[in-house]
Length: 277
Image (cartoon, rainbow, N blue to C red; front, side, top):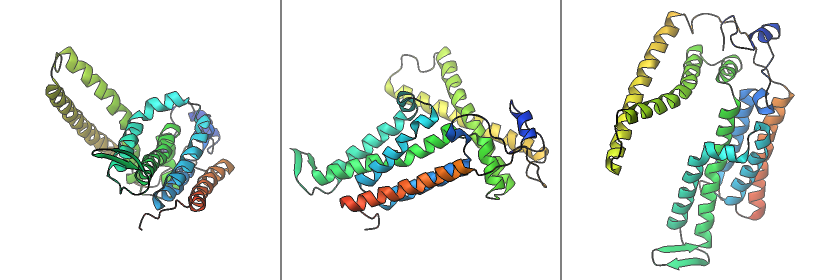
């Protein structure tokens, strides 16, 4: 979202062609709202039923799009490995605590796993990944300014809300770099060096509090600066118009068709399990 003039390397091109989008992968060139719509359709489909078939179909359809990001599976794993660990923990916990029906697969004292409990665990793990992956794709392929443009121009959201969200998204990267800088500064002062597990936890908490204070201060200064410059007041002009193209229609359609195919596959396999039943 820009007021009157465009900044950055693509500024001249934007002024000559207001509808131009920066070059990049197909997902990067797509309108952010089309990606949001596709992700929403997939999320609704996965949330409607708790079964491994629908989640597996959605996850497979999402992984097929990985080449469109021009990122290797290993590079993607390095970014999302905490989500993978969380999915594995969720699958293990569900399989351990779910109702023990079906054939017994393992009976070792407190560890009792059956076909149904393991199936429920697999469904929960795949479900978590299927819900999280579209959000990862959206973050990796979407410029925050383009998203703000689409929210303001297409959805007509309040300008103050859009500008606040844009500022927040821009500051996320700064928080990551500041966390690393704080860690190096504390190590340089010997804080937490050669300490036990409890001391490391305390050091982590202290560093988190410092980062939180810095984030609040920066947000306060940014809000005051934006208010002083008149952001959110009066009519705005646009350096680049947010438009929908055939590519956006295909992305939205892909999400809707994949969601319907996942539900149909679960029904055909007899595993469809409505969330409210």
